[in-house]
Image 1: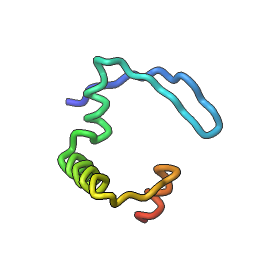
Image 2: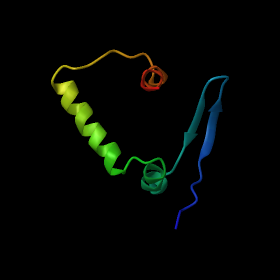
Image 3: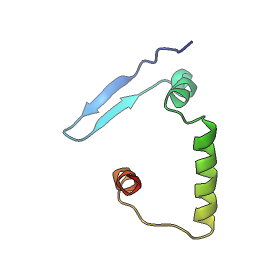
Image 4: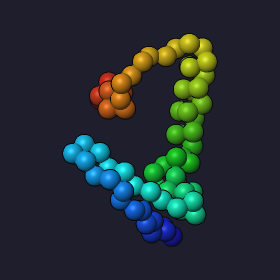
Length: 70
């Protein structure tokens, strides 16, 4: 059963949103956005190995990475 998460909206700007969750909701939040999925964790491990091997590229934003994938 999914747990309803509450978040407090702290700041809204033209291009930004900031929200806060409680410590108690942290694990549920991570689970809801997929941070505990096996394929995500494997991707992090591969990324760490690439970084240690010096295979890095400077990026300005996450959007830049997403655009290169598609």
